[in-house]
Image 1 (cartoon, helix red, strand yellow):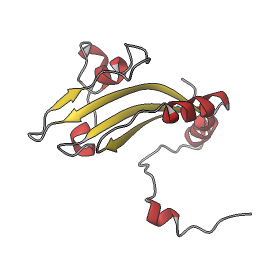
Image 2 (tube, helix red, strand yellow; image 1 turned 135 degrees about the vertical axis):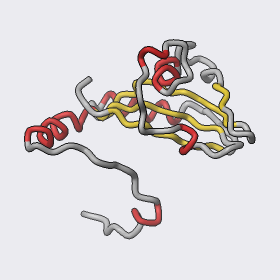
Image 3 (cartoon, rainbow, N blue to C red; image 1 turned 90 degrees about the vertical axis):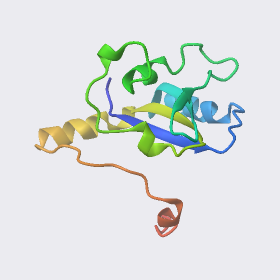
Length: 139
C-alpha cells in the first residue's frame, strides 16, 4: 500500500450498475490517483440484518471477499480486529449499498509528511453537495 485507504459507502434505492462507475474508477486508477481495493454489495433488511449481494455480471466472482473479511462478514475473521467503524451506522434499514475500499495513491506522500511532522489523522469526511455549492469556483 502506498496511500491511505478510504471506506466509501454509497447507498442506492434501486441500484443500476451500467458500468459507468467502474469505468470512472478505472480512469482514476490509470491516472495514478485511486485504486479500487475491493467493493462489497450489501442489502440491509428492515430488521437491521445484512445480506451480501453477488457481484454484477462480468465482475470478478471474488469481488467483495476482502471487504467482507475486514468488516466481519467474511470467513477469515483472523484478518479483522477491533474496528471503530460500523456498517450498521452507514446503511439504513431497507437500503442497498456498495462498500468500497479506495486506496488514495496521490495521498501517500501527504500522509508521510503528516507523520514526519508528528501529526496523525483524527477525522475525515466529505462535504455535502449543499456545502460544496458554497465554495467559489476557481479559474
